[in-house]
Image 1 (cartoon, rainbow, N blue to C red):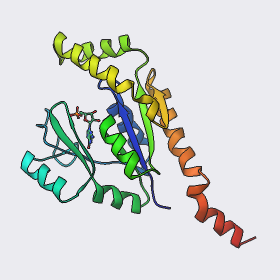
Image 2 (image 1 turned 135 degrees about the vertical axis):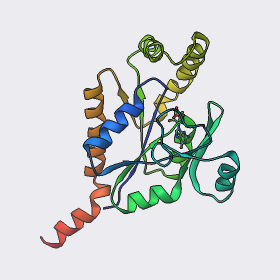
Image 3 (image 1 turned 120 degrees about the vertical axis):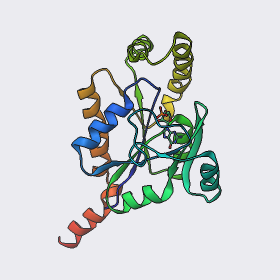
Length: 201
Ligand code: 5GP
């Protein structure tokens, strides 16, 4: 059976990346799509592992070549998901996670209606603010900007198929895994298996 595409979005500070990396660590049949971005690498980020870091000229060329399943500008940088990489991983039977923003999620929902979309919520906005402060990477002004952006993103949560609240990492990871599992057991996706059983009846 070929794999399916799972969109995972969340406001920054919700713990989406931690959740996704735990899920991938624990389930070898799930992969994460590595996006292209024009953003500068952060300390510790590796080209080809966290992102494909490209310059604006290359990004624009790839857009022109139709290389992206979706692409968007987020916090002033461009991000895009390679169609070919996602197609290859699905063909090999992997479920593929697209860790993308709400604009990208809207595009993928349109072009790949069979994809499954999941929005991760923080328990409360106060908790999100506290998590952003604990990171100690942003000034007060930047935290206020991020919280406003978070509010706008969270308003779009109702457009997603599933919503997972990240109050407790283990519980949220289990919720995510159940969504993947249920999707694999979905009747439409199991057609080949059902046909095989019917042939032997
Ligand atoms: P960061 O630069 O902090 O890694 O990511 C910033 C935002 O861009 C996050 O919300 C992340 O999910 C989103 N993002 C990362 N890759 C992509 C992508 O390929 N497409 C879109 N639309 N958003 C992305």
